Image (cartoon, rainbow, N blue to C red):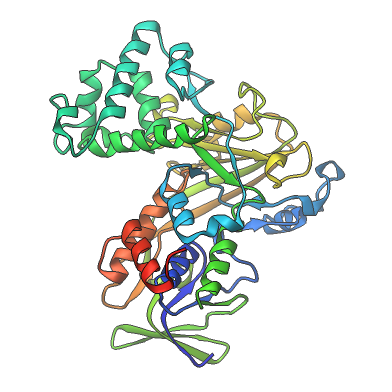
Length: 443
């Protein structure tokens, strides 16, 4: 234990960084106060443990099947098939430890009903989300986005990607409010409408990512690992170990030792592990983070698929804020026995959103109504915490709390951001591949 490390990591999503740093030839120690991998984003099994965690009296009824058939993610998120996390998994070869299933559909809420998010030209033309003329205009817009290339001004058609706002782009294609709602929230995956007055290139790239992810598998752009997300940190832990990283679970963190304003180590069970840099989530450094809001999540156990989803065994539903007079979207993420996370014939739907009022449970009613009847609910409200500073001086790099979104893109942005703060350089997949080949040789 009396060792010096380049990096010391506490908790989960940090595991992705520990994998990447190990592959880059750094000496990494990963400590977690929990007896399992994954911290706040763990999968809970057996079901009895979930009841205990949420202080629900008694044990699960027999109708819930065997407790150990359940792996319930506390913070479920889907992976975009062509998104950043999948690239990180492929780059680090963690994919060899995981099995993924494509999510069966993405749906959007409009006027109290849910509709499938049109994922192909044919679906867009058949969709009852839009009228006939609107469909033609939307199709034109999709074609424009598909052809858009930042490096080729001929594809801009008079739009300046760094100056023209997205509001102006929608106007150019004459798209109505409902179409704007589902484009911004179900395709570009924005949580609020702030993006409308920002330069359009970011939104166009987000819609491209959605389309390209979709093109890979057809049903939806989202993937989910069998046995739940707890498999991800375990995969990265194995990876880190292969490249010489050290893992310690069940290690209480007694003190983060700082000298002259800079971190020099972490004390656990009377011993000190020395390090040059420390990465951790907000729960380890209460005095260095601030609260910027709250997220409510409700885990619902169902014995039926969600109505109007074509009996999908997994799906995502986005309720755009405009449709329910809110500032931020409500998300529903549903997975089931098909992913080995629930007993046979059971479904788990998790509703999440950013809290806006004093009565958060009222805020998510529109989502819960879509799920009726619900067998058992587990409600949690967590603080959204962000670091007070970038960590350049202390060399303590703190991640942000998981937000309400049902996909990993924002989490990956945070990982890349921490990587940049730590190393001073941008996170670049190509560069990393080259480095890995230099250190460990070609495959």
